[in-house]
Image (cartoon, rainbow, N blue to C red; front, side, top):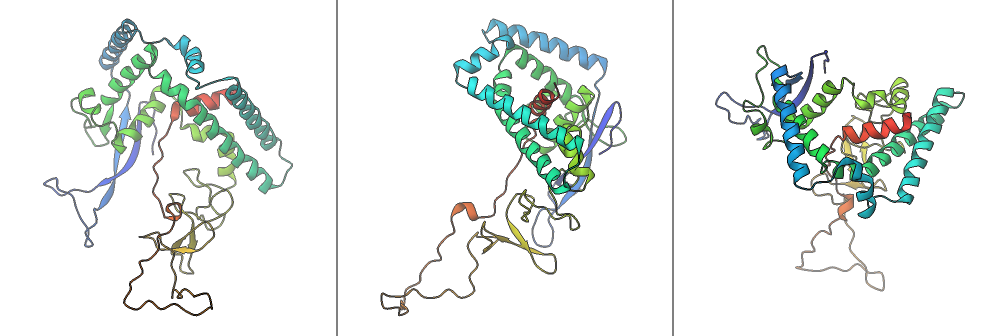
Length: 330
């Protein structure tokens, strides 16, 4: 991704199409994907002016409708049981623990593996802080200020996302009208994050976190800050076990291909999630003799759901992370 003062360029993998707009398929019948470049740019003054007018309009409408103000947020959170003294104590404890580990990383003088453990713990604790703030963020979006700010941001973004071609063709020709029905589009989701950084004049928050700076410096993570095995760059979890990009346990063959395993290292079939057993043995009767069921087909027993390879999607929560990061820096 390139970054300039007035524009941020990013790439997204999208389905390839033919000249008539139909999807392209490979010889195996799978959809072909290609990487395309998109960009977000700072909107012109006229668009900014229209966005500010929309913000004021939404705020007045929200206030007239009786929506709460941001100053009332803490009281509402406590009334709804979404925040209490115990959660505040946990949040403050996490904040102190992150700062203590950050100090130890800066001070040095410990084994590198111990420093890695501290950095990983910082990531986990910061993620917990973000999770704790999610209820606050969700409720904040329902305040008069939250609704009006979201409306302004969406309006600006809808007029700022473009194809990164020679003419910077608008991605949403009709602006906000097109965007509000396309918010789950991966291009829009990635673009909104990039636009947030462009408007706030900040870099990716992950790049600024002290634990990530340490882990990247000593090559414990890849460019996406995922833990990797030094030397091979294979993805691993915090315990050093091999995983795929979705967090499923895997083991490698000698030729660098891999197969799925359960938590105990037993091989799994990638398609079904069932255990791979070469020759299932017959069950035995009380005397230890094999039981032969003639003419009966015994169906294969499925593996418990949690052992099956899974696919997960993670959504970036930039603002919650920003708040959690800011709290640890106060």
